[in-house]
Length: 222
Image (cartoon, rainbow, N blue to C red; front, side):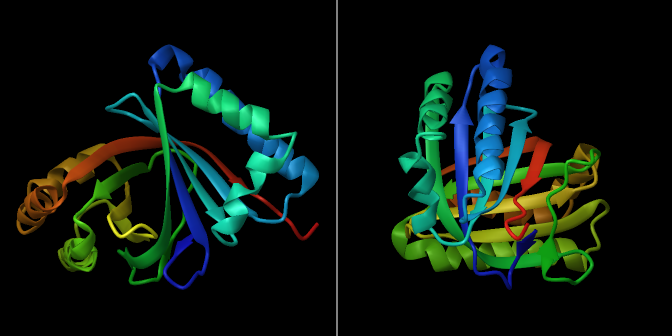
């Protein structure tokens, strides 16, 4: 669940990985989740794997109780070698830390839910802006989401806007019913103009389509 009312820390791991290593990376990330479940490590809320459809990228969207706890796995003998292995398998790896700034859902709610049930498309943006422009850029992204909701864009499920703990970082998580619905909406006014403005505002940005490969929620109460 990505909610504007939650107080969780979000760590978005971006792995650039060659196609022939993607399965090995997903298996390694899955092994990390297995250790978390077995040992009931107390800081993990969820871990969600995404494979880019249009780029050699895998994203692990993680939720933690707080950012400090997000470093805990590096100290554990069960998980530290697996984390090292995940970095060795990838050409490049970066984790950025965020809080959810706002969620704009098509149904007017305050959350969207990551699901691996199949069918839905995730569009994830990892952006870098000039540090003094983070607030301005967040407002632009919210205008973009509000435009999609107001237009009742076909297939739009919701947009979660993320404010980076680092002042230059911003991320987005969009949910769409299909890739065709997303492409159609991006060609329509005013969305097309807002998307152009988004691209022109950032100093660096990666915006890709993803399949949700696996969702793991950690039940720490049992």
